[in-house]
Length: 290
Length: 243
Image 1 (cartoon, chains in turn brown, yellow):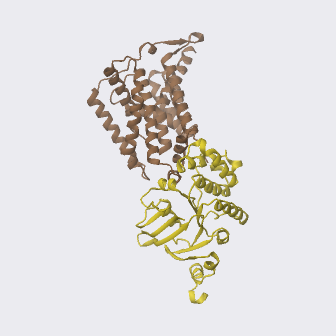
Image 2: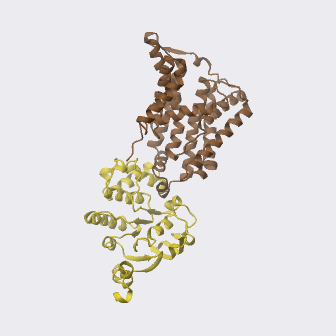
């Protein structure tokens, strides 16, 4: 029983990492109806950039790298959106998808060229092995717990921006009806850039936390993208808290799978995703509207 | 003072002319009605003015400034507000938020500075009680009122109303007419497309008739409605028959 509870607990915490992966994907889809196939690769890019900055600056803590990474990734997201993706947006949803697919190939190959195909890992220091004891001999890892806290805080911040600020209302209006938002004076190309920039902020955070948790290589992106997609779809398209919940459900499913047999970890996650898709095609927590 | 001037505006889709050298001038505080049969090019004219459609030729001036090259969002910020024939609220947002978006993006104010004006506009449009309701749950009359409210919150100099009374009962339409009279007295110039002509005539002081994309006539509403040309367009009578 203890081992089972332990699995559930670690599933929840792993799931929060998936939620972190997926929040940017969810935001971009919610605002622009844009499916970013390169999302996983950008997370890997962020992890590699953190690694490079650690070498350059000589600072030991990858968390501190977020100070550089967050603004950098925001600007990258804004420029990519305005320069590359905005011109492709339109009634044909295939064009932007193909472009992000191309970006995915470029990022993967670029990373391989720059950092080789070797596996890398960010060293988080003592926090990686630290844990907080719980009753009944259970323990909770400090770093996974921090991941959960950061995921909740980040999604809470995005939610606050979306529902409580001028920028957020304009983003939601654009998501609701693009052309009417334009007629109300909303500068949609700029706004899309901001949304992509915010998504890249989540990517920066996800990159650092994933890089500390597990090893990564230049071609790890697509596998991470699958988890992000599954979290978004289980949770409900365009709903950020739903996305976090979706990530946690996925994490729990994988943990239970792994508890039953190590070979079932991934399979259990995918099966739960398929079940969710069959019975709740709009996700478990679809965004309220109409 | 002239608020809106349209000069020689042209737009065609293949062989179909939706705007055929249209000239129009709207003065400050004026209310102008536009009538014409279905497919005459009325809504297309609005799309050209609001920036949803780019003209093939011609110029649009707002307060003397050429806005022809501006996109829709820039024109809104410059002072052109519009409503749609089929209301298009941001259905996942509350009524008040719908207005806030228009006030902050269209009129360029901060949210805090827009609260009072948004509430005042909603009160005027009889929507204040529904301020915190999701716009998607409103009735048709309320949605139409929200269209006007949202456009007003962007603080337009000229307001384009596209068949705002269509689909409403007579009582609802006259309620809307009363409200629009109030809007008009605020000094906002109104250009109003409407098939329900009696609602239109109750507010406007000039009537413009459009057919096949071209301006056929304009003038005093009563005179225009009585003219042989309008009867010919609407009822297919030849001018000399009507005369």
